[in-house]
Length: 221
Ligand SMILES: N[C@@H](CCC(=O)N[C@@H](CS)C(=O)NCC(=O)O)C(=O)O
Image 1: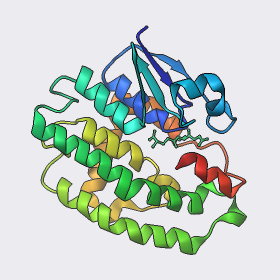
Image 2: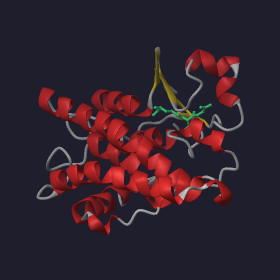
Image 3: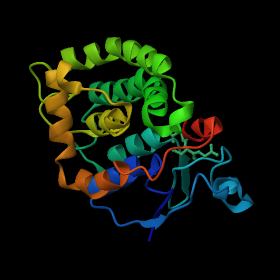
């Protein structure tokens, strides 16, 4: 089998698993853990020297960074459906992937940590509130983009939707009520009802236990 995905599906590897399933690509899954030191083992460091999952091997190509892996898979195997169709769409898919990583991901994770991921006595509601307020600006941007068009690039689901939605799966953990952003709420629903998303969603939505140490956050960011 040519493609191997490394990473426990409770990690960001779920993003890549979703993409591989959308593309119906056969792949070998190695569920490398990220909380048990496995990413720091010499064999894994040869694959990703950052000691993080996911990582993907496709033939001779070794890649890290979940959203970049998905952009590659979509471009290589997604044709003009999941993949960008032409330079303009390529630029837009890159834009939305970088946008969600830079404008949303860390803040959302911080909110989720202070709402759920940290052990109860380590949660700080003020920090969670501050993070939620910070998210209002990017959420308004997404809401405005999705008002009047079903998907981020227009009329079809693409890697841009998948990458942005996959990061947004942290929303329930941050206790965010998305009904304030109705277009975003509809869009999330449409993304997550896709059969390929359903495969991993239950795993992602059942985080095993609250973290007991603040340091654990570093493993997610
Ligand atoms: N920006 C990277 C982040 C990867 C990342 O932080 N992965 C976490 C799991 S979700 C990890 O492997 N942590 C292990 C560690 O930091 O030791 C991506 O999107 O792939």
